[in-house]
Image (cartoon, one colour):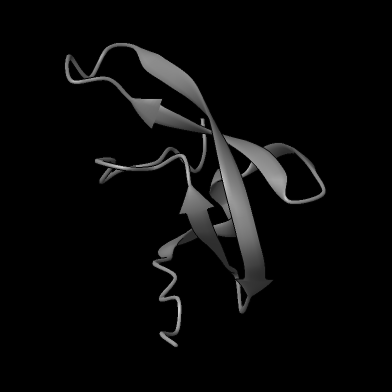
Length: 67
């Protein structure tokens, strides 16, 4: 029997918008740095000002926290 290893991406809680339950949205900058994308994410838990996301941020290195 093997244990399932869950990977979390830690982001500032300020990056979450329009959250309901474990689902929320974040805004991420596009590669041109002029446009943004609204991305649906799955939040596993929130602790000490950070959200720990398990789905929706693959390949994302930056999230927008204000503006």
